Length: 141
Length: 427
Image 1 (tube, chains in turn green, red):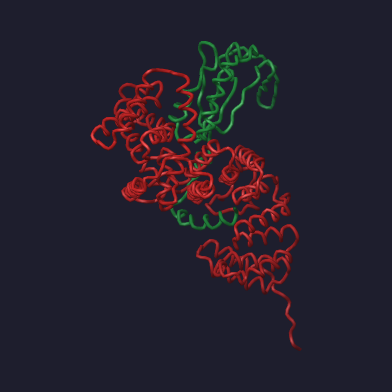
Image 2 (cartoon, chains in turn blue, orange):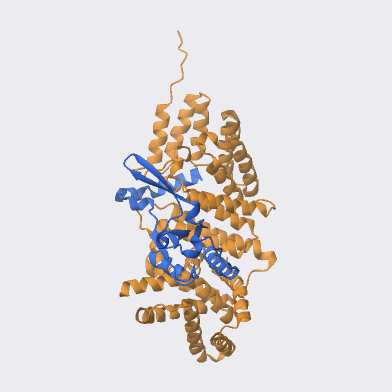
């Protein structure tokens, strides 16, 4: 299963205040733990919304709004994409994350849609085709 | 926290902590089986206490302390185990004594070695392959016996017995808990890679209609491979295997059609490839190649997979490069099947005659006798050269040789679809 983990912004991240060396080291260690465990797929920090933009849709209309945006607590400062076996595992990992900001911060965990989730139904007959797939996999490899 | 939620939280922590826990304990008690027993006892304690008290702030430390206490209790009753008993006691004192940063750092330093020693033990050549798979998934992967049994379509008691026997074999052999010495390392590492790739292939061959644990094995193998790559960053074949798995796994969504039928690589919708995994695979391949040295089989297979991954469309595939890579792979492995794949690549790169010349040599290869892909490939190449009668005969033969019904139908259909050659009629 995959989860996207979004680090919510705070005043510092929006003001472009860089993390301290100690904070960077701590976060770096956390990232490294996830890499060593084989669960981290991707992750990046995002520039403050002052460098960003929004596209608003209304029917066929498009409007572009430049940042910065004001509702700090709902903005995103960075994300990770992790591969784990369950929602609980994603949570347990993120409990170990160092506090991303001074004082209060928040991260949000969301499961990523995968092929199986789109409701494809497979009949029991298809189990017989496992052997065929094995042979094909060798052919395709 | 309701009970099933609490259980899942404990299981989640277990997946995160078990390898490190068992490895750390094994370093002290020098017995992987005992270490695992102690770890399992700590897990039982966690399942009892955490639903009531909540997951502790430092679950890893809680489990380790609990396991060590359990070890002390257990070893107290075995006179011969005095030294281990004392060692555990000493360590608990140090752990309790608080955060001596030097000790914590030292522990962190050797955890890598401990994890390596553990995986080398679970993959020890003394054990039958299926036992290596089961032990590795359990101790390094944190899977339960039940999960492993479901994944491999084996009854749970059978798998449990397999694990018990394996631990007994290891205990009787009294193996040192260590990273193998340099002269053994390549061979022992090959065994670890073989186990991981076996898990991967088991998962890769599963269908979506299967128990979800089965395709889940692909993720388990990827995780184990990535862990190993961080533990042995200077081993090119480890990165090679990871690269191969990431790229192969990237095609999961495109490999199967809407009715569960397999889709050949050339026909796959590349928009359905997982480009996060492709990117990771290419990066891992870079790491392998940066380490230099003679390329090994995993690195070469990964490089071939990467050639396909880099092609936006099948027409853009760099077949010349692939042919060269198969050339190296054939040399390294001596495998006739690889030679057959090389023939296909040669045909794609240089024309069907070139491929056919190699295939013709392989027809006398005893290892390929009865292998349906040999006449299948030969038939395709003959068809491309408009030698339709010969092609039809080969494809029909291939259809006869395969046990696989849909593939048989595909081959027979292909044979039927070939045009007839004009015949001279006697007047």
